[in-house]
Length: 235
Image 1 (tube, rainbow, N blue to C red):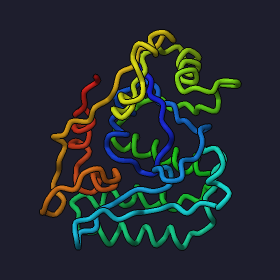
Image 2 (spheres, one colour):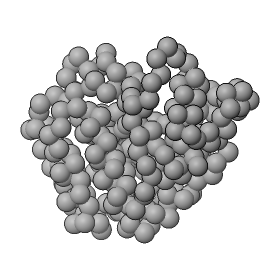
Image 3 (spheres, rainbow, N blue to C red):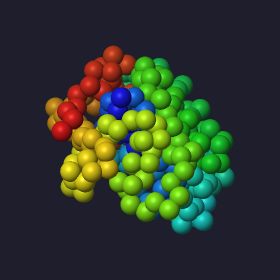
Image 4 (cartoon, rainbow, N blue to C red):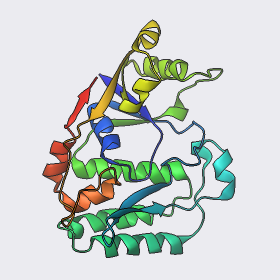
């Protein structure tokens, strides 16, 4: 059994979904602090006019930027969300899987849930269902971590509460976490490395990587994405 722990993101890039797919239990780290410049409420799609990424952003209430993620609230701005839907429709209308994917995305984007974690978790589970990913989701806030300050201590509490000690982290964690330190806490840590060979056709032109999963959903079939989900190595 493997476990992954990550903050919830807004339609994140393929590496995030590979992590969910690689583990048996995915813990949504909803009781961490909001990262102002992170990916919790924003992502990028492709602007085909100049082949550059273009941001899509979920508006937040101002007080949310100083709160924990589970306390974050979306701004009541359905017009801005409608504009996001329109932007996606305009950019991807000619994509090969637009007719199949847009009916999935639109109600998720327009979901009126004011709580950001609820809003994000619904979309994450819906994309998993679409792709046939059956990983179990658990909310971090349901596990008592009172008095714990350091990441490894919190991870240990989460893992041992759920009875899983094989922890998978994104490759970026390799610069911060030592396997020996985690082993002293009774945890085995490995790092998921997305293979550089991942590439797909985006209306021709040079491939633009690291976009929202929205881009891949529009251009790749379910079967193609299911194959890409396995294009990683655990280091």
